[in-house]
Image (cartoon, rainbow over all chains, first blue to last red; front, side):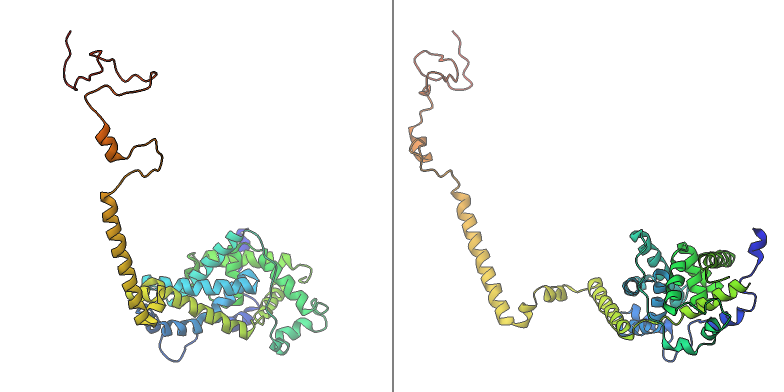
Length: 218
Length: 141
């Protein structure tokens, strides 16, 4: 088992895909997050509105992939931002606003699912038409690919089911790293664990996903 | 390793799941509505809270002042009634068997054993002549 842990899942030919996914908060025009946070702490709702604009899609992406249910994701996204606004006076700026709000989102989503105590039916967003121009999509649907005969919607359903069968901790790291492109170090700060723990969770989560999707991945 | 590559490619495709734009706009609007509500709840001056709870009062001040006058008059009236009722507390009954307090007070004799039915006995008749010894007086034969 110890040998398994030494395998770095980031190594290998898939590295290129992952590199393209690294999505730290991009440099934005206009006031910095810190300036907006300061204004929002002084009661400027417009400043907070700007922060919502900046991070809405990321927080929605996190909650959606964590729940595979768009209605739940919308409710959770709303709760996260309102909670963040209420807690803003207590935000001391020890971490970035981005890290802080992600932490709120992860905790809220995990608690939400614990309260529900039961898996909800999948309610999935549609694939963007741009998928058909993606090289990876072409690879997967080309001759010789094991996924050639599977419809996209079936694939989407199976993938989301496999994701939902992961434990909360494992799903969190898979979503944050593999889907949102957040680096290990940042995830470690967000979930309050060491980088080694994050790597280990990611490794086991991927292995479980492979097992769940074994009928497609051979 | 092949399986891992395939899994990564599948994960990559998941990034193309995009939410409906109009739903996202509505969601942002709901967030900001929630934020404004939270802000209103956090620190609302007394005057604002009054204004929110009684918007009609501030929308039409003359009606508000009229309502205040009526409320003041009502309180004043209630206060006068309360003062009057404090001095005239009593049991009101129309039964002919119960004498009114003023008449009863006039008809009660405290120095005689009360005229009671035979099965009632308050205390032994000390004198035997229906007179009552005042309290504190020690009777010796």
